[in-house]
Amino acid sequence: SQKWVLMVTAQTPTNIAVIKYWGKRDEKLILPVNDSISVTLDPGHLCTTTTVSVSPAFTHDRMWLNGQEISLAGGRFQTCLREIRSRACDVHDKEKGIKINKKDWDGLHVHIASFNNFPTAAGLASSAAGFACLVFALGKLMNVKEDQSQLSAIARQGSGSACRSLYGGFVKWIMGKDDKGTDSLAVQLADEKHWDELVIIIAVVSSRQKETSSTTGMRDTVETSLLLQHRAKEVVPKRILKMEEAIRNRDFTSFAQLTCTDSNQFHAVCLDTCPPIFYMNDTSHRIISLVEKWNCSEGTPQVAYTFDAGPNAVMIARDRKTATLLLQKLLYTFPPNSDADLNSFVLGDKSILK
Ligand code: PMV
Image (cartoon, rainbow, N blue to C red; front, top):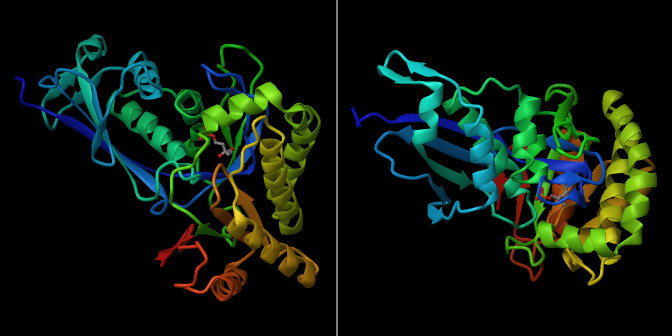
Protein backbone atom coordinates (compact mmCIF):
# COMPACT_ATOMS: atom_id res chain seq x y z
CA SER A 1 0.00 0.00 0.00
CA GLN A 2 1.08 3.64 -0.54
CA LYS A 3 -0.38 4.70 2.80
CA TRP A 4 2.42 4.18 5.31
CA VAL A 5 4.88 6.75 6.63
CA LEU A 6 7.85 5.85 8.80
CA MET A 7 9.25 8.64 10.95
CA VAL A 8 12.19 9.33 13.23
CA THR A 9 12.71 12.45 15.36
CA ALA A 10 16.03 13.36 16.94
CA GLN A 11 17.34 16.30 18.93
CA THR A 12 20.97 17.40 18.92
CA PRO A 13 22.64 20.18 20.92
CA THR A 14 25.22 22.46 19.40
CA ASN A 15 28.87 22.36 20.41
CA ILE A 16 31.28 25.14 21.27
CA ALA A 17 34.92 24.82 20.26
CA VAL A 18 37.53 25.57 22.91
CA ILE A 19 40.32 24.87 20.41
CA LYS A 20 39.03 26.24 17.14
CA TYR A 21 38.69 24.73 13.71
CA TRP A 22 39.44 27.38 11.11
CA GLY A 23 40.70 26.56 7.63
CA LYS A 24 40.18 23.63 5.29
CA ARG A 25 42.85 21.68 3.45
CA ASP A 26 40.12 20.19 1.24
CA GLU A 27 37.02 22.27 0.74
CA LYS A 28 34.87 19.65 -0.91
CA LEU A 29 35.42 16.91 1.68
CA ILE A 30 35.72 19.45 4.50
CA LEU A 31 39.09 18.37 5.83
CA PRO A 32 40.57 20.82 8.36
CA VAL A 33 44.11 22.15 8.73
CA ASN A 34 44.20 21.31 12.45
CA ASP A 35 42.55 19.20 15.15
CA SER A 36 39.90 20.92 17.30
CA ILE A 37 38.26 20.30 20.67
CA SER A 38 34.76 21.27 21.75
CA VAL A 39 32.22 20.89 24.49
CA THR A 40 28.72 19.79 23.55
CA LEU A 41 25.96 21.62 25.39
CA ASP A 42 23.41 19.72 27.41
CA PRO A 43 20.33 18.58 25.48
CA GLY A 44 17.28 20.82 25.40
CA HIS A 45 18.84 24.24 24.82
CA LEU A 46 20.52 25.56 21.70
CA CYS A 47 19.59 22.50 19.77
CA THR A 48 18.15 21.31 16.51
CA THR A 49 15.15 19.01 16.33
CA THR A 50 14.81 17.08 13.10
CA THR A 51 12.12 14.75 11.90
CA VAL A 52 12.86 12.55 8.92
CA SER A 53 10.19 10.47 7.25
CA VAL A 54 9.91 8.07 4.38
CA SER A 55 6.83 6.98 2.46
CA PRO A 56 6.17 5.40 -0.92
CA ALA A 57 3.80 8.35 -1.47
CA PHE A 58 6.70 10.84 -1.51
CA THR A 59 7.76 11.70 -5.05
CA HIS A 60 11.07 13.43 -4.29
CA ASP A 61 13.38 14.34 -1.41
CA ARG A 62 12.29 17.57 0.30
CA MET A 63 13.55 19.55 3.24
CA TRP A 64 12.16 22.36 5.44
CA LEU A 65 14.36 24.47 7.70
CA ASN A 66 12.49 26.40 10.40
CA GLY A 67 9.28 25.92 8.43
CA GLN A 68 10.62 27.14 5.08
CA GLU A 69 11.31 24.73 2.26
CA ILE A 70 14.93 24.79 1.09
CA SER A 71 16.45 23.37 -2.05
CA LEU A 72 18.45 20.18 -1.70
CA ALA A 73 19.98 20.43 -5.15
CA GLY A 74 23.70 19.82 -5.11
CA GLY A 75 24.11 21.09 -1.56
CA ARG A 76 25.71 19.66 1.56
CA PHE A 77 22.36 18.32 2.78
CA GLN A 78 22.28 16.18 -0.31
CA THR A 79 25.82 14.95 0.31
CA CYS A 80 24.82 13.74 3.79
CA LEU A 81 21.63 12.17 2.45
CA ARG A 82 23.55 10.37 -0.30
CA GLU A 83 26.20 9.07 2.11
CA ILE A 84 23.61 7.74 4.57
CA ARG A 85 21.42 6.28 1.83
CA SER A 86 24.35 4.32 0.43
CA ARG A 87 24.69 2.63 3.86
CA ALA A 88 20.96 1.94 4.39
CA CYS A 89 19.96 -1.54 5.57
CA ASP A 90 16.77 -3.59 5.84
CA VAL A 91 14.08 -2.05 8.02
CA HIS A 92 11.34 -4.18 9.48
CA ASP A 93 8.66 -2.47 11.59
CA LYS A 94 6.52 -5.40 12.75
CA GLU A 95 4.02 -3.21 14.61
CA LYS A 96 3.21 -1.16 11.52
CA GLY A 97 3.67 -4.09 9.16
CA ILE A 98 6.29 -2.20 7.15
CA LYS A 99 9.18 -3.97 5.48
CA ILE A 100 11.81 -2.07 3.53
CA ASN A 101 14.60 -4.07 1.95
CA LYS A 102 18.08 -2.63 1.59
CA LYS A 103 17.68 -2.34 -2.17
CA ASP A 104 14.31 -0.52 -1.86
CA TRP A 105 15.93 2.61 -0.41
CA ASP A 106 17.14 3.80 -3.81
CA GLY A 107 13.56 4.17 -4.98
CA LEU A 108 12.21 5.80 -1.81
CA HIS A 109 12.18 9.51 -1.00
CA VAL A 110 12.44 11.31 2.32
CA HIS A 111 10.94 14.42 3.82
CA ILE A 112 13.05 16.28 6.37
CA ALA A 113 11.83 18.99 8.77
CA SER A 114 14.39 20.71 10.96
CA PHE A 115 14.00 23.42 13.61
CA ASN A 116 16.60 25.41 15.51
CA ASN A 117 15.60 26.88 18.87
CA PHE A 118 18.24 29.64 18.43
CA PRO A 119 19.30 32.11 15.72
CA THR A 120 20.51 30.43 12.54
CA ALA A 121 23.95 31.46 11.24
CA ALA A 122 24.66 34.02 13.96
CA GLY A 123 27.87 32.39 15.11
CA LEU A 124 26.06 30.05 17.45
CA ALA A 125 27.05 27.03 15.44
CA SER A 126 23.56 26.29 14.16
CA SER A 127 24.97 24.22 11.31
CA ALA A 128 26.83 22.05 13.82
CA ALA A 129 23.65 20.91 15.56
CA GLY A 130 21.75 20.79 12.25
CA PHE A 131 23.94 18.44 10.26
CA ALA A 132 24.71 16.21 13.25
CA CYS A 133 20.99 15.82 13.90
CA LEU A 134 20.19 15.19 10.25
CA VAL A 135 22.82 12.47 9.89
CA PHE A 136 21.83 10.83 13.18
CA ALA A 137 18.09 10.84 12.37
CA LEU A 138 18.59 9.55 8.81
CA GLY A 139 20.94 6.87 10.15
CA LYS A 140 18.21 5.66 12.52
CA LEU A 141 15.50 5.81 9.85
CA MET A 142 17.59 3.80 7.39
CA ASN A 143 18.95 1.41 10.03
CA VAL A 144 22.54 2.34 9.27
CA LYS A 145 24.99 0.19 11.26
CA GLU A 146 27.93 2.63 11.39
CA ASP A 147 29.09 3.82 14.84
CA GLN A 148 29.03 7.45 16.03
CA SER A 149 32.58 8.16 14.83
CA GLN A 150 31.83 6.88 11.34
CA LEU A 151 28.61 8.91 11.31
CA SER A 152 30.64 11.94 12.42
CA ALA A 153 32.72 11.67 9.23
CA ILE A 154 29.46 11.99 7.26
CA ALA A 155 28.16 14.92 9.33
CA ARG A 156 31.56 16.56 8.75
CA GLN A 157 30.74 16.77 5.05
CA GLY A 158 27.68 18.86 5.92
CA SER A 159 29.51 21.27 8.19
CA GLY A 160 32.92 20.64 9.70
CA SER A 161 31.98 21.49 13.27
CA ALA A 162 28.93 19.19 13.01
CA CYS A 163 31.08 16.08 13.39
CA ARG A 164 31.73 17.08 17.01
CA SER A 165 27.99 17.18 17.91
CA LEU A 166 27.57 13.42 17.45
CA TYR A 167 28.95 13.05 20.98
CA GLY A 168 28.17 14.71 24.29
CA GLY A 169 30.79 15.98 26.71
CA PHE A 170 34.25 16.90 25.43
CA VAL A 171 34.98 15.93 21.86
CA LYS A 172 38.02 16.02 19.62
CA TRP A 173 37.82 16.28 15.85
CA ILE A 174 40.92 14.51 14.58
CA MET A 175 42.00 16.20 11.36
CA GLY A 176 43.13 12.90 9.81
CA LYS A 177 45.89 12.18 7.33
CA ASP A 178 44.32 10.52 4.35
CA ASP A 179 43.08 12.67 1.49
CA LYS A 180 39.74 10.85 1.18
CA GLY A 181 38.72 11.93 4.67
CA THR A 182 37.93 8.50 6.12
CA ASP A 183 40.10 9.25 9.19
CA SER A 184 38.88 12.82 9.72
CA LEU A 185 36.33 12.17 12.45
CA ALA A 186 35.23 12.93 15.99
CA VAL A 187 36.08 10.99 19.14
CA GLN A 188 34.80 11.56 22.66
CA LEU A 189 37.46 12.70 25.14
CA ALA A 190 35.24 12.70 28.23
CA ASP A 191 31.53 12.20 28.68
CA GLU A 192 28.99 14.78 29.91
CA LYS A 193 29.35 13.74 33.55
CA HIS A 194 33.13 14.10 33.69
CA TRP A 195 33.17 17.84 34.48
CA ASP A 196 29.60 18.80 35.26
CA GLU A 197 30.46 21.72 37.62
CA LEU A 198 31.11 23.85 34.53
CA VAL A 199 28.32 26.23 33.57
CA ILE A 200 28.09 27.68 30.09
CA ILE A 201 26.55 31.10 29.60
CA ILE A 202 26.03 32.54 26.16
CA ALA A 203 25.53 36.28 25.83
CA VAL A 204 23.61 36.90 22.64
CA VAL A 205 25.20 40.15 21.50
CA SER A 206 23.45 40.10 18.17
CA SER A 207 21.12 37.59 16.58
CA ARG A 208 21.67 39.02 13.12
CA GLN A 209 23.13 36.73 10.50
CA LYS A 210 26.91 36.99 10.24
CA GLU A 211 28.37 38.97 7.36
CA THR A 212 31.13 36.58 6.35
CA SER A 213 30.13 32.93 6.21
CA SER A 214 32.62 30.49 7.70
CA THR A 215 33.10 28.96 4.22
CA THR A 216 34.15 32.24 2.58
CA GLY A 217 36.09 33.36 5.63
CA MET A 218 38.10 30.13 5.87
CA ARG A 219 38.86 30.19 2.15
CA ASP A 220 40.23 33.74 2.35
CA THR A 221 42.22 32.90 5.48
CA VAL A 222 43.80 29.78 3.97
CA GLU A 223 44.75 31.73 0.85
CA THR A 224 46.19 34.79 2.56
CA SER A 225 47.10 34.36 6.23
CA LEU A 226 50.66 33.44 7.20
CA LEU A 227 49.56 33.44 10.82
CA LEU A 228 47.19 30.55 10.05
CA GLN A 229 50.12 28.46 8.71
CA HIS A 230 52.01 29.08 11.93
CA ARG A 231 48.94 28.39 14.06
CA ALA A 232 48.10 25.10 12.34
CA LYS A 233 51.66 23.75 12.31
CA GLU A 234 53.27 25.11 15.45
CA VAL A 235 50.58 26.21 17.88
CA VAL A 236 47.52 23.98 17.76
CA PRO A 237 49.21 20.54 17.96
CA LYS A 238 50.81 21.45 21.30
CA ARG A 239 47.70 23.23 22.52
CA ILE A 240 45.54 20.18 21.79
CA LEU A 241 47.74 18.03 24.05
CA LYS A 242 47.60 20.61 26.84
CA MET A 243 43.84 20.96 26.50
CA GLU A 244 43.35 17.21 26.64
CA GLU A 245 45.38 17.14 29.84
CA ALA A 246 43.44 20.06 31.35
CA ILE A 247 40.15 18.31 30.60
CA ARG A 248 41.40 15.00 31.97
CA ASN A 249 42.49 16.68 35.24
CA ARG A 250 39.57 19.11 35.42
CA ASP A 251 42.21 21.81 35.66
CA PHE A 252 40.15 24.99 35.23
CA THR A 253 43.13 27.36 35.29
CA SER A 254 44.77 25.71 32.25
CA PHE A 255 41.43 25.09 30.60
CA ALA A 256 40.47 28.76 30.81
CA GLN A 257 43.87 30.06 29.70
CA LEU A 258 43.96 27.74 26.68
CA THR A 259 40.34 28.49 25.73
CA CYS A 260 40.70 32.28 25.85
CA THR A 261 44.10 32.28 24.10
CA ASP A 262 42.82 30.05 21.34
CA SER A 263 39.73 32.17 20.75
CA ASN A 264 41.90 35.28 20.58
CA GLN A 265 44.29 33.65 18.13
CA PHE A 266 41.40 32.57 15.94
CA HIS A 267 40.20 36.19 15.77
CA ALA A 268 43.79 37.36 15.17
CA VAL A 269 43.93 34.97 12.22
CA CYS A 270 40.71 36.53 10.93
CA LEU A 271 42.31 39.96 11.18
CA ASP A 272 45.40 38.60 9.40
CA THR A 273 43.19 37.59 6.47
CA CYS A 274 42.98 39.67 3.31
CA PRO A 275 40.44 41.25 3.29
CA PRO A 276 40.31 41.20 7.12
CA ILE A 277 37.33 39.55 8.81
CA PHE A 278 35.75 41.13 11.90
CA TYR A 279 33.49 38.81 13.83
CA MET A 280 33.62 40.49 17.23
CA ASN A 281 32.22 43.95 17.92
CA ASP A 282 32.64 46.56 20.70
CA THR A 283 30.32 44.64 23.03
CA SER A 284 32.35 41.46 22.48
CA HIS A 285 35.53 43.38 23.34
CA ARG A 286 33.94 44.85 26.47
CA ILE A 287 32.97 41.36 27.61
CA ILE A 288 36.55 40.15 27.11
CA SER A 289 37.87 43.07 29.19
CA LEU A 290 35.34 42.43 31.94
CA VAL A 291 36.28 38.76 32.21
CA GLU A 292 40.04 39.42 31.93
CA LYS A 293 39.91 42.05 34.70
CA TRP A 294 37.87 39.81 36.96
CA ASN A 295 40.14 36.78 36.40
CA CYS A 296 43.19 38.95 37.03
CA SER A 297 41.81 40.43 40.25
CA GLU A 298 40.95 36.96 41.61
CA GLY A 299 44.44 35.68 40.85
CA THR A 300 43.06 32.56 39.15
CA PRO A 301 40.62 32.31 36.24
CA GLN A 302 36.94 32.20 37.21
CA VAL A 303 35.50 32.29 33.72
CA ALA A 304 36.72 31.38 30.23
CA TYR A 305 35.40 33.14 27.14
CA THR A 306 35.33 32.09 23.54
CA PHE A 307 33.85 33.62 20.37
CA ASP A 308 33.02 31.88 17.11
CA ALA A 309 32.24 33.42 13.74
CA GLY A 310 30.07 36.14 15.26
CA PRO A 311 29.96 38.65 18.15
CA ASN A 312 28.18 36.41 20.69
CA ALA A 313 30.16 35.52 23.79
CA VAL A 314 30.30 32.00 25.12
CA MET A 315 31.48 32.03 28.71
CA ILE A 316 32.35 28.97 30.74
CA ALA A 317 32.22 29.48 34.50
CA ARG A 318 34.10 27.17 36.84
CA ASP A 319 30.97 26.45 38.89
CA ARG A 320 27.40 27.54 39.54
CA LYS A 321 28.33 30.18 42.13
CA THR A 322 30.76 31.82 39.71
CA ALA A 323 28.13 31.68 36.96
CA THR A 324 25.71 33.61 39.17
CA LEU A 325 28.34 36.24 39.90
CA LEU A 326 29.15 36.47 36.21
CA LEU A 327 25.51 37.10 35.34
CA GLN A 328 25.35 39.84 37.97
CA LYS A 329 28.46 41.48 36.56
CA LEU A 330 27.15 41.28 33.02
CA LEU A 331 23.75 42.69 33.98
CA TYR A 332 25.48 45.50 35.88
CA THR A 333 27.72 46.35 32.91
CA PHE A 334 24.96 45.92 30.34
CA PRO A 335 21.72 46.88 32.14
CA PRO A 336 18.51 45.75 30.42
CA ASN A 337 16.97 48.39 28.15
CA SER A 338 20.21 50.36 27.95
CA ASP A 339 21.84 51.23 24.64
CA ALA A 340 24.12 48.24 24.79
CA ASP A 341 23.31 45.78 22.05
CA LEU A 342 23.44 42.80 24.35
CA ASN A 343 19.96 41.40 24.20
CA SER A 344 19.74 38.15 26.08
CA PHE A 345 21.59 35.47 27.98
CA VAL A 346 21.32 31.79 27.36
CA LEU A 347 22.43 29.41 30.02
CA GLY A 348 23.95 26.49 28.19
CA ASP A 349 22.46 24.04 30.65
CA LYS A 350 19.51 25.98 32.00
CA SER A 351 16.78 28.34 30.93
CA ILE A 352 16.96 31.34 28.66
CA LEU A 353 17.06 34.64 30.54
CA LYS A 354 15.67 37.70 28.79
O1 PMV B 1 31.59 24.15 10.75
P1 PMV B 1 31.53 25.60 10.33
O2 PMV B 1 31.74 25.77 8.87
O3 PMV B 1 30.27 26.25 10.81
O4 PMV B 1 32.76 26.36 11.03
C1 PMV B 1 32.81 26.60 12.40
C2 PMV B 1 34.01 27.39 12.78
C3 PMV B 1 34.03 27.92 14.21
O5 PMV B 1 32.76 27.82 14.81
C4 PMV B 1 34.43 29.37 14.18
C5 PMV B 1 35.06 27.18 15.06
C6 PMV B 1 34.70 25.78 15.48
O6 PMV B 1 35.64 25.00 15.66
O7 PMV B 1 33.52 25.48 15.68
